[in-house]
Image 1 (cartoon, rainbow, N blue to C red):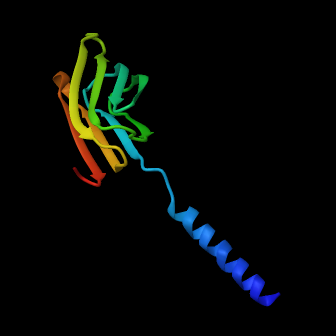
Image 2: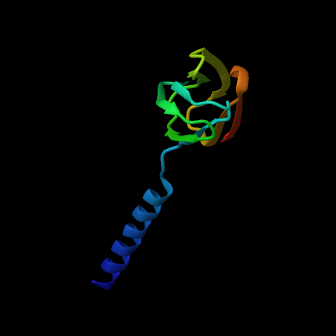
Length: 122
């Protein structure tokens, strides 16, 4: 019976180790509103999906976690308040299975900076 317990314990330990090492690849996205005014109707498109927010106040950050299932560019669009000008910008490509962070900084005049910190790099 002792040999059976030892074998069962070892098998159980291997199963736990396997599942502890498995996790879904994801990218933590932060959209920073540094435009000097609130923005409305934010939409961030990435390969296979999109997310957004109705409004982000000036100086505020919006956080979202994505899972990249295909490869392609990140695109952002939003409306500047009070001018209601629609702003659009394309950023870097993301690739399926990448992990890490992506900062999207919205600046005055419709300028956008993308700061990807993802692995593996392509």
